[in-house]
Length: 224
Image 1 (cartoon, rainbow, N blue to C red):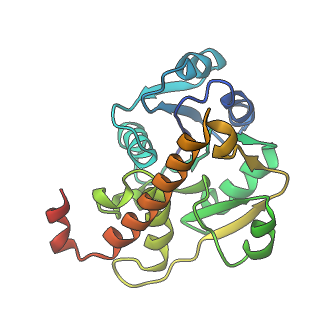
Image 2 (tube, helix red, strand yellow):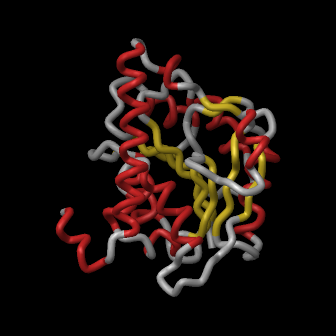
Image 3 (cartoon, rainbow, N blue to C red):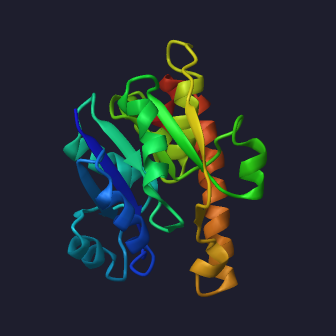
């Protein structure tokens, strides 16, 4: 049983160093993998120079990047930790708190909620679209391929533990990542128009992912 840290990245050359520094120093992680999703900057070179393994995903999207790495590297009982590439304030104890419940076998999935005002108010009850979560690799195989395309991956990971194929609710461990924040799209993108487009795209993927997940298996092939 191994533990992989998978970091999907798109044009994160100027931000990914902070996350890599923490992930590469974590003793619980056996291999750090950066999946470059069609970046137009030197994200891949930065990650490789720092000591991470780099994979290239030819199809843009977080779900596609994660599934590529899991399929190529992991076995059913391996532990997967997903981290967003643009986190700031990330520390070793954050990774330990997320990984701990999964590594010890108490939970099959664990999620970290970033430190924001909404996060502090509802983190005990709500997970949302968090980019920091750990799970058993086998959990991904329970999700129909269409259901984890793009940002819908996080919706599917939430839902598969709440409404599994056997209708057995499986709890998700949660932890508040004190002091951790992510780069807002308003500052990440060069224009407000591009930032708004990115935000709307995330919302659309979340909405479509929710619809797809709740669609009966026998109808999903219509969407391919």
